[in-house]
Every structure is written in C-alpha cells, then in structure tokens.
Length: 159
Image (cartoon, rainbow, N blue to C red; front, side, top):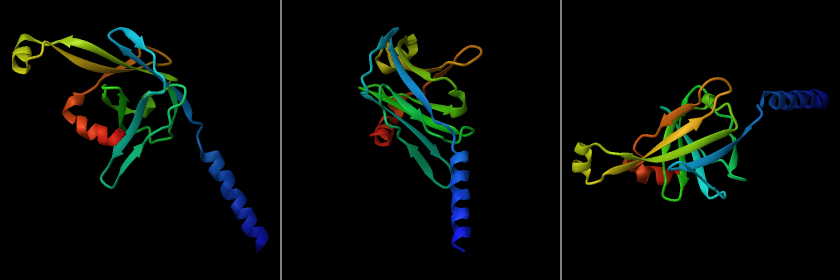
C-alpha cells in the first residue's frame, strides 16, 4: 500500500513538472518624447483578467528592469497596467502577442485639434503606445485608451 501511494505521488509530481511551462523574462523599456528613459526598477506592471466568475490580478516582481512573464491564459484579453512616476497607461492585450523579450512603453505629446483645444483648454495631450517586437514582420503597436478617465481605478489596481 505504501509503495502504491509513493508511486502515485511520484507520478503526480512528474506530471506537474512536465506540465509547467518555462517563464519568459520580459524587459520593459520606456520612451518619452523620442528619448529612452533610464528605468531603475522604479516602475510597476500588473495584469488583470476579469470574467463572469472572478477577477485575477498578477503583479510580477520587477528586478533589473524586467520581470518573468507569468504563465497566464494567452488566448484571453488581459489588461496590462504600467506605472512610472505620473505615467499610468493601460493596454488591452493578448499575451500570446508577447513573443519577444523586450516590450516598450512609448509616450508622446499629440497636438489636439482646434475643436478639442477649445473644449478642454489644452493644446496638447499625452498619448501612450505599447510596442511589442515580433520574430517576423513589423512590431505590434497598440495605443492606450485615455488613462486619465480611469486613473483612480488604475491606481487601486497597481498599488
């Protein structure tokens, strides 16, 4: 009986070990107005998935301006939030798109149309992109939705 239990436990542990995928190390770069900003582990990243049953939030540990990409469901849409100083963009992504080891968050000033400048009192607005290199072809470049609209919720999520 003891042998049967030991064999069952050994097979179970082997199955777990074989089923685990290798985590990829992902480096984050930040480019503001065309110049790369030197990061010193002073940023945060988190991933959120909400479905009808539960909300899953993953906050990877940042070390050497990188983190290990968690083994998540790559066929579902995740919200990725990036926080660096007063920058707080979020992106809706499929994690299968991240096949390279480096992703870049880009921010630029965008001149607003005359109509929006009059309506908001601002001439420029800050826009954010997430650039994901591909093994073949052009990189994926995703624009963030307006982070100011959900700033309080994003801060609660990432802090």
